[in-house]
Image 1 (tube, rainbow over the protein chains, first blue to last red):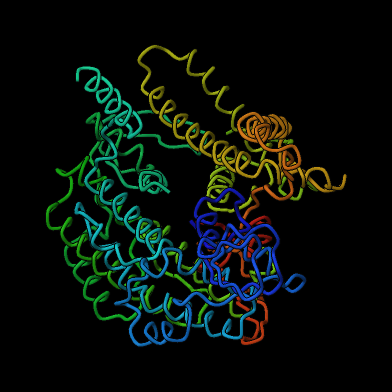
Image 2 (cartoon, helix red, strand yellow):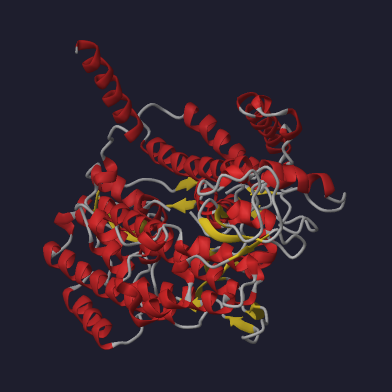
Length: 204
Length: 183
Length: 220
C-alpha cells in the first residue's frame, strides 16, 4: 500500500483509511439526519451536537467552501500524543493509534488545523525514528512467526516490513537454490485445501 | 526483480574455460565465440561455460579474484572502510554461486571461497543497512550508491524504495505539495 | 555477422547500421528500463521485430543442421535466453497497459500527430479492449444495481495513473550535469546533481525520466 490516494481510486487501504473517524461539532442544522447521533432522539442534527463522522463524510461537510461542521483533531494526533511520540517513538503501539496512522494523519492535514504543520513534522520524525527497528526485524526474521514483530506497527509500516521480508526470502531461496525446484503455487495449494474442506464437511 | 534474473544477467559475464574439444567459430546472435581448440583457454559467457561443464566438455578457470589471499584482502579492506569498496566483479555473488554449484572440482579450496564470499556479503549487507538508516534519518532526498552490486541492491530494492516513497509523501506534507494532487 | 540496414536509432532521425549483437544489447537495456520505470515507456517495436526475425532465421538454420551437430544446442540455449528477455519485456508492458489502460487511452486521445505513440498498434488495440471489458465488468457487477443517479463512473476519476515520484535505482551512461533532483520548497533550496558516467544513484523517477528516454541513464 502507499499513502498516496491519487494513485489508485480503488486502493482498499486508502478507502479504509478514509473511513477512520473524526470528532466533529455541528455548526449548522443538518435536517432529518438526527438518526446519525444515537445518543439523542431529535429528528435533526442541531448546532452544538458533538458527533463522530468518518473522514470522507467530514471532508464533504467541512471545507473552505462549506462549513456545516467544525472538525476537531482525533486525540492520537493532539499535542499530548505528539509529545509521547517525540519522547520515544519506537515503543509506541502505532497500530492501536492507527491502524492507518500516517495515511489518516496525512488526510487530516486537509482541514488546515492550526496544528497541521506540527502534525506533519511529528509524522516525519516518528517514521524516521521507528525505521531502523522495522528494517532490522524484517531483515533478520527468517522462518519464524512474525506477528509479534509487527503487532505494534501501523499498516504502512507493516507493508514495509513485508517488503523487507520479501527481499530477504527471495534472496535466501536463490542462495539455497530452491528457485530451481518446481513447487505448487499457493493458489493451487489453497484450492486443494478448500476442496478437502468441502469434502470433510460433506462427510460430517 | 527475481534474484534468478540477476543471475541471468550475471551469466553474460565472460569466463575462461579450457575446452576438451575442438570446434569452429560459432556465430551467435549476441556475438561470435570460438574457434575452440582442445586444451587452449578461451573466454566464453558464463551461461555457455556452465553448459559445457555440465556436459563435461570443459574445465572452468576460476576468475583471478577467486583467490584466498585476494578475498581475505578484500574482506579486510571492507572492514576498514567506511564506504563500500569496489568488488572485483559486479556479479561476484552470482558467479561464486554458479561456479561452486556446477564446477566445484575446478575451484581450489571451494569451501573456503564460499565462506569468504559469504563473509564479504554479510559485511556489506550490514553496512548497507546502517547506511540506509543514516540516509532515512537525514534530510537527504537522493543518494549515490557506487560500488554496490546489483544483487545487493536487489535484495533491499522493495524495502528501500517503498520506505523512501513513504518518506517522500510525509515530507511533502510539510510543504503541502502532495495534497494538491489528491483533490 | 549480419548487419541490419533499416533500423532507426532512438531519435528516429537517422538510419544507422546496427549489428544483431547491438540490437540485442539495446533490447536488454529496454527490458530493464521497462521493468523498473513506473510509467509505460515508448514501445521499441523496431528492436522487438528485428530480434524476432533474427530468432526465426536462426531457427531455420538450425532445422537445416545435421542431427547431433554440436552447435545446435548452443544456438538453442541462446535463443531461449533471448526469448526470455523478449517475453519478459512485452509482459512488463502488458502489465502496465492493464494497470494504466484508461490513462494511456486518454493520453493517446490528446497526442499530437508529431508526437510518437507509447503504444504499438497491437498494444493500442489491447488497451482499448481491456478498458472496455473493465468498464462493462464494473457496470454489470455493481453499477447497474445502484440508484439511477449514481450509475455513472467518471473515467478521469477512476483512472490509475503512474506515480512518477516513486524511487528508482539508476546507472549513469553519459556524464550529465545539472540534473534538478528536488525543486525549491519553502524550507529547502533546490538540489542539483552532476551525474558522472558509471555512477549509481537512488532518486525519484520524475527528474530522470527524460534521461531514461534519451539513454543517458539506465534503470537497474
